[in-house]
Amino acid sequence: MITHAVGLSLGPSSSIESGVAVMEIAAGKLIYIDKLFTMSDVQLFFNNYVSLNNSIFCISLPWDNTMLEGKWRVLSKQYQLIHNDEDMFLNRDNWMQRFSTRGCDLFSELKEKGVDISRFEVYLSRQKLNLYSNYKERSSADCKFLQSILKSEYGFDELPANMMPMGELEAIVGAILAVRKLKGETEKIFEFKGLDVVN
Image 1 (cartoon, rainbow, N blue to C red):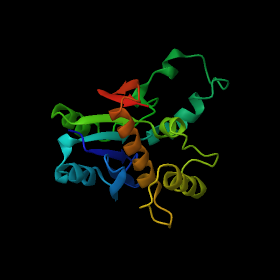
Image 2 (image 1 turned 180 degrees about the vertical axis):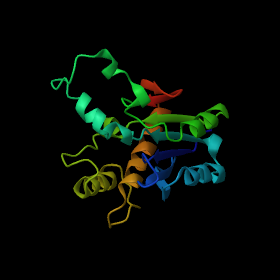
Image 3 (image 1 turned 120 degrees about the horizontal axis):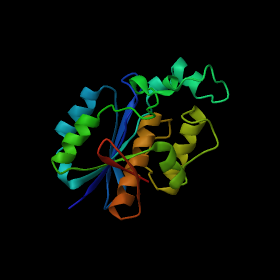
Image 4 (image 1 turned 90 degrees about the horizontal axis):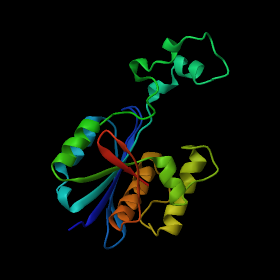
């Protein structure tokens, strides 16, 4: 029986924090929130989490930072054609990949063990749950907005008054999405590395 919903907001690299949030489904309360950095921290969390088979997981798709290289900026502007050579548009070094494959091996391994794991895209999920603000994404104003609306609309009174890290707030969005998936209120939008991406 599924008793807990776990959201994990995975950062694109170890320099950007990842957040994890565990929600008790019956009570609708958050029982654990934490920051993680390296994939070793994420692995340690899963190794020490005792309710793997009694939980449903939603893990975010981190953006691939390599798409911001100079080659991407030049070639993404279709009106600035440098020369008419089809070889220029080949996907060498996977430079057109939007999402990072960070942690995919670990999550596939957990899925093979029978753990209920899905992925989610933070931007799309915030829009679907009416948690999207008009502020710049991941800015302090956006962070404060998300924290306030999670407290007022979803009743998470246990959230502190001071500003939380965005990774932890996005993990709470993942936990909410996991509960909605359990109720059958989500749909698969695409597949990424063998795992369903839901919204």
